[in-house]
Length: 115
Length: 133
Image (cartoon, rainbow over all chains, first blue to last red; front, side, top):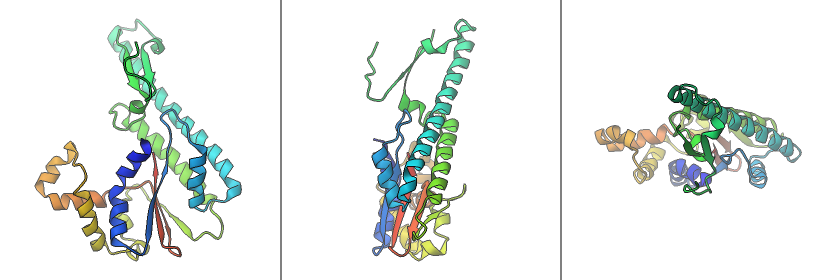
């Protein structure tokens, strides 16, 4: 789904370039991060190969990238929880400090009807 | 007591007003690191050049560079882009500009597009448009 969104985002760039420069090749390379911070190893390596990254350096690069993605994901979630916490405090006059009981965060595959 | 029922995809989206700044900053941070790492890990004899896009970088600034102008002219690219942009959705926030002058709107929208990264291999005549999603 994210891959399709990325392709749609640059559809006009790739399409216009292909139409305007017939002797050249144009391809979009997407580095996709899952919403929960995961990265598909095989996809990542395939993209690195296209970009002439040295074989012996790819594992280190992947490990560093996953670390970066997880840390970024953590910053996003912490920011979200802080915002929710501020809102809860403002609306309940500090009745409940632990927002963990108030927030359901679902994965995209899960049903909206869960009770 | 309010209960939030939100999806991960929403929280992680710059489309969520409350999260836009932090999500965008997180994206840029991951991308800067990955871009620099790939640059440093390239094969020494690689003919592929990773082009750095600065903060103001977009398709318009890219097509001021000699190496990209050699691929095709700005005029040719704008003509082709206009056809494709015309088939794509005009967002509600863009309607005023679109209604003013649809042709200029499509061309300007194309030139303001900003891929996360671009690589060019002049020897093999290949351009990669890079996106972190």
